Image (cartoon, rainbow, N blue to C red; front, side, top):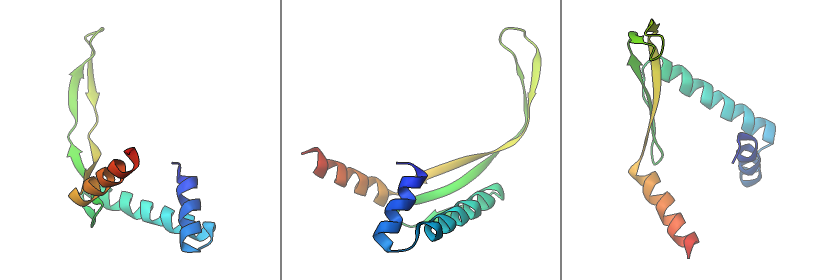
Length: 98
């Protein structure tokens, strides 16, 4: 499912206009990214935890040329699924596979 399809389905199920749903969705994603960039966790009950981990810079050696290359520091995004999400996905899968 694409972002566009998700917005359309959400619009149909809530009765809100697609433009409003898309605006809210985009704002939520922007906030999520900003919080993760600040090393903060975002927990959505029943869904999971978005977080990020600082990865310090390091020097690596190129396999072929043996040249030293500095890899810059970065924030690595993470997501941990909640147990509720895992069980709901499996439950729906088990029902549809029959």
